[in-house]
Length: 319
Image 1: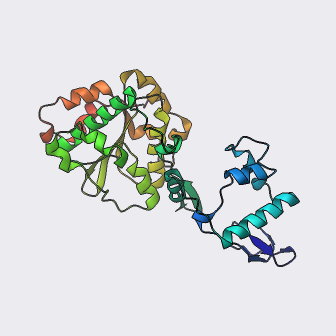
Image 2 (image 1 turned 135 degrees about the vertical axis):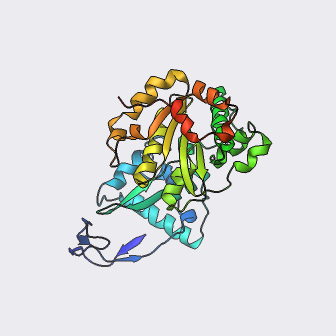
Image 3 (image 1 turned 180 degrees about the vertical axis):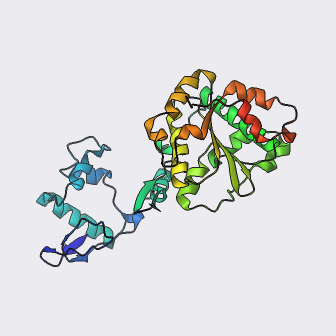
């Protein structure tokens, strides 16, 4: 909570960077400053039911955000008095509002990335961001048959790479389920941490890729297993990776059931993927149907083969 200490005045010198559009300033004095876990969530029952901007709406809806997006909106006097009292109470007798796992992921998911002419903010989304959090007392959801099939092919792709001599990375959330399908003798090929010297934003993107084949400190191939119709998420992750590291030399693959072939090849040619600065995604990303993975996994001498053999099984989206 800030207290105004001056009249509004104009100053064209930027506070933060040369692109700042804000030229009207007010001198302020901090009155209440709270640590993140002491900040009072607007979805708190008392807050939601008291404020006039929220109490007419279903709790949890984002309708309240419009009020804060507009510049210099004025609170109703009753709302202002309530918030001042609430914040002062929180400063004197703080209550803790612990973050959920999702809150913590979102706090670290935003990063600034330097482009040729400026710095931009990017956010790396986790797959879990689309999943509801479990409330206390709720049971873990059962694993759907489609998910089991996806894990099985994730394990097949990982095992093929391990047999060819690559080190393997799978996301930490998938690791135990994948290893259930992998012979114990090659568990040592699976990495506990990525040996890569990238910035945090790139590493968060890389860590979520379903299967990585690595040689030393270099990524050779990246695979996304798309059993359901949610093909777009895997392609977005590929595009994120190339946008963050445009000089990366890596082959990318979408692994999916044969009946997804047309959908995958069409999605790869979307404008958003074809107009990347480094060139169209379809030049680096191919489709590998499940039956091709099955045939490849049945090869008797994978340990003596080069990964270039994948070229005999992959299907390109190039016209």
